[in-house]
Length: 169
Image (cartoon, rainbow, N blue to C red; front, top):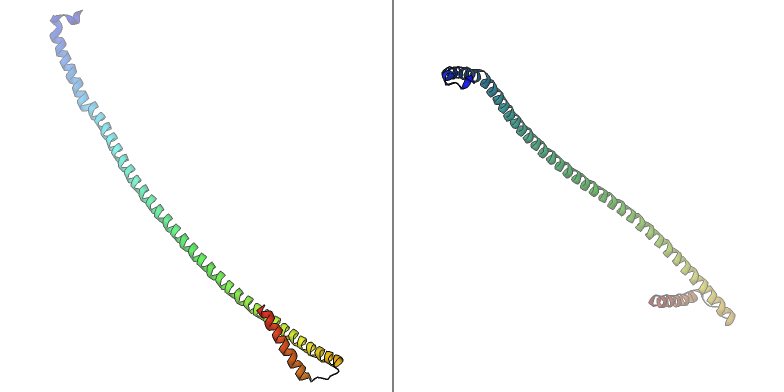
């Protein structure tokens, strides 16, 4: 093989050095700067993207904190509104209860007065009938005429005793 002949080593080494030098110069001044520009742009883009992601993450965190704060304020406002409404309803119920109690107490008092009036009227009727009955019985049995005032006084005393015995039980 002619490449392995020691007589042609020198020209081969010479051309090898020239081609290596030319390729080195082409690589050094043409290809490597383009590749390094691409790598530098890529590195810058990655750094910018990371910086933008960090910025967006901080903004998202700030938005989340603002959202939680607004949500907490809304809950506090809702709680306060509910408590105020509950208190207003409680006061309204108490007012209606008091109004109804007053009305029912007045009706009960009126009914008690009517019952007492009916009871007094019935007792007066019982007294009158008892006095008349006693007077009639005495006049028929004993053939005596008694004074209306004396009969009424006696009947009144006996009825008072009967009421007292009934009350004592």
